[in-house]
Image 1 (tube, protein in one colour):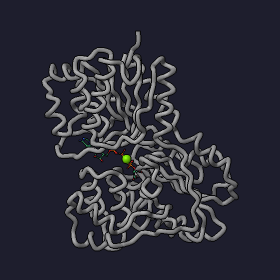
Image 2 (cartoon, protein in one colour):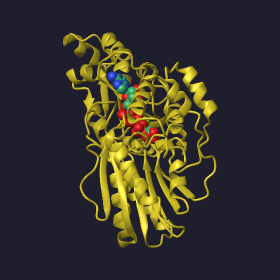
Image 3 (tube, protein in one colour):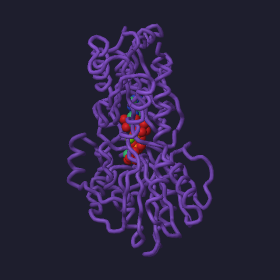
Image 4 (cartoon, protein in one colour):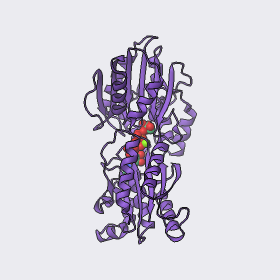
Amino acid sequence: MKNLREDAFKIIKSSIDFVLPEKAVQQELEMIDLQDNIHIVAIGKAAWRMAKAAKDFLKDKVKDGIVITKYGHSQGTIESLQIYEAGHPIPDENTIKSTKKAIELVQNLGQGDVVLFLVSGGGSALFELPVEDVTLEDIKNVTDMLLKSGANIVEINTVRKHLSRVKGGNFAKLVEPAKIYSLVLSDVLGDRLDSIASGPAYPDSTTTEDVEKIIKKYDLQLSEKILRALKNETPKHLDNVETRIIGSVTKVCESAAKIAQHLGYNTMILTTTLDCESKEAGSFLAAIVREEKEREEPLNIPCAIILGGETVVHVRGNGKGGRNQELVLSAARGIKGYQEVLIASVGTDGTDGPTDAAGGIVDGETVNRLQEKGIDVENALNNNDSYHALQSVDGLVITGPTGTNVNDLTFILCN
Ligand SMILES: Nc1ncnc2c1ncn2[C@@H]1O[C@H](COP(=O)(O)OP(=O)(O)O)[C@@H](O)[C@H]1O
Ligand SMILES: O=C(O)[C@@H](CO)OP(=O)(O)O
Ligand SMILES: [Mg+2]
């Protein structure tokens, strides 16, 4: 007899453990011949663990360095490195303060110097110094508007890059003439290096014309000042950078598949590029569950169907939630009454939206349990209040910050 819920938590924990950055950072450093006097700059939600792994491996070769991560994501001091925490997903004063410190660290380096740049998602909010005339307040407003617009991360970062002195390759320019080795943990579908953390050390493929299209597409209401600032073009060529991707959503899907197989499920990775509206993804997953229960297609049961990606939410209500929680709550509607089924979805960084949950988990009884509590699923979804709905039926997955960030893992278990 299988315990689907227990298995789901095992799959979540083990597959996230598998994509913690330590091993990947070390493996990559073993292949690069770095001399002494290395300067570490680590940004993003996985910055602390990436920097710790690099320092443990390179030891005294590290001259100095800086870690900029999200609040609650650092785990103490690291010898020779300054550690900062700042606001995410909306940047704050500490974002600017620590970014200035990073610039100070690199701006007077010479040709023989090397910056080891450790990049992970979250970097866009955590690493920022706006172009002239644009204030932190402006950046906060634009970020908030973009995050709620339903724009995907590539579109969001296309706009952010054109307002920044460090994004879109601009940081690499500040590091010149020193060289940058960049190790990147990808949380962007298709591993687009100019989008991950807004590509501070990668030639930017997006243009001011792209920015204009995005403003039109999402009807963004921006001031004259911001529109003027958005005319800044980003660097298209960089000569001082070498970049390697050391982890992505594909890896977490592969590890989830292995664990599910080990637990006795027939397993398939359906996609690693799920990118539609969260609610629609939920409905689609419910349809797959019904197919499994009615016809045992596409897999014989017991089965685990795994998806990776990053869905989007048009936030219109004023509830609390995140894209993974919204996805599973939406899915709960379509699997109502089915026995021995489960759908789970989590952010591998341990935080889904502005909540303390990594994601959510639902089964065939979830909607009935919500009704017993007097919660209407449609209302909760319309108000983007998936967190409180799931909380009332023990449907939240809480892991705390994981120290990695390779996007979202979603899966179905059927027995
Ligand atoms: N109440 C809500 N319900 C669902 N999604 C939300 C809600 N509030 C914010 N979001 C979504 O959460 C996203 C930010 O969540 P977060 O997990 O920090 O993203 P990431 O892990 O990609 O940094 C925003 O893009 C927004 O669309
Ligand atoms: O920093 C960013 O631009 C994005 C993508 O890398 O990460 P997150 O969605 O975690 O903020
Ligand atoms: Mg993201």
